[in-house]
Length: 310
Ligand code: RIB
Ligand code: CA
Image (cartoon, rainbow, N blue to C red; front, side):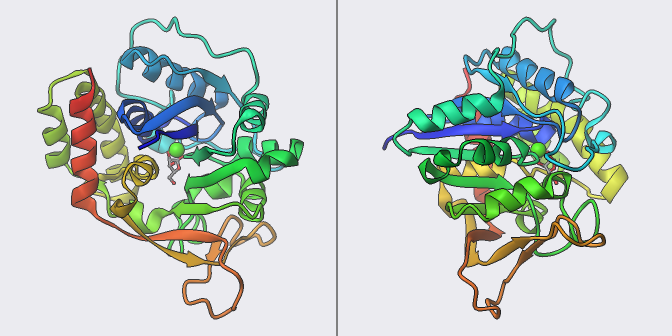
């Protein structure tokens, strides 16, 4: 089977870190590069976090700094969940890996334009870099194989009742992506909140006993504690790696084609992914929205890939 070529655009972030690990380890994924965006923390911090994860795991993957702010509206971070560093918990060696010189958006444009149309863009943070790339060079749009995002919800949000963090942080960028006409797979809170990383899961991954296993345990130590304090979860919902798990084995989630509109106009519901679950608007679906997850298979995939790390 040909490897799936991906660009992983992220805002590390504890769950982004596990997504990076999964994408880098799995033999069926060709991680072309990591583009970083403001989200869980400021761009300097999310970039440092991406570099630290790559350095710790010994990943020879280029990291590119992207947009320091959303396209239009002011940024806000999620320090309550991810801490002041954006990756509180793990302790890393002094950082020597450097980000590439080229801006993430320009690298994304160049890479997609040179491609045969076989690159999947995975976003696990606000979609600012992708939105900007689409606006700066519309010719990349038809060359994107698929957009796979962690974001949104057709049930309750996690920043407001209406909106999920990655979307509300840059609703305008999400609007650009969802109106692009490219195939979209949306992994929203509706399913990520079923992948709760309970203490037994952390213990299970800890028993693997390699560097990837230790990173997982150190990440979850902070992430699960903060998720319990903020949301009352007994285990933190491991949102972002589900996008990668889907690319490795699409059967890990169940999706439903829906017409999904991003609300960029209202105040109360800004950033809402208005997914027409029942299709009663009779509008053409523009996204495959995740409606369920095989949680057992997901954790098996996480353990299997942690075991593969060497
Ligand atoms: O709402 C959860 C999402 O927002 C995750 O991607 C998390 O890392 C943050 O970016
Ligand atoms: Ca994220």
